[in-house]
Image (cartoon, rainbow, N blue to C red; front, top):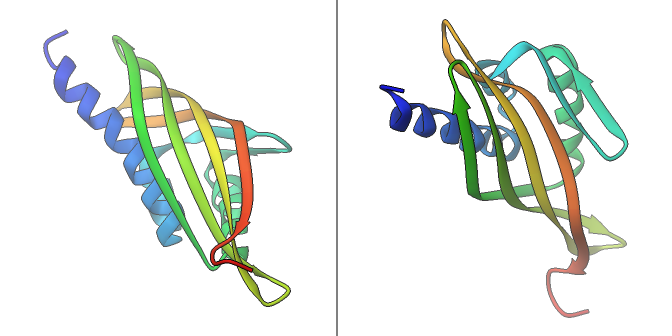
Length: 140
């Protein structure tokens, strides 16, 4: 494939932009990286289409801050379709009973991408939660 390296970079950037959109609460950014018929799902949630995705992602506002660090991006590309897996450690900061806490998740995203006239877009993401921990940010 003549543009294979560039395709991999563009697809990887979707993962970075997704994390940034969550952490910055930048909902229009979601629209720029997913297809209109995108599906994002995981334990106890499923969002279909950009309107549901944006509404569902707004649940992140229950946290004071979030920090999604994505890495280990593996992707296979065949023509105008790609599939990949991304590791993510997602930190969620919140207060409980006057104590600041952090909820950490070890996530694997199983992704599917499609090349569109506007470039590569995410059209399916499964969030697999491998582990979690909930701790105070400072000693209690």
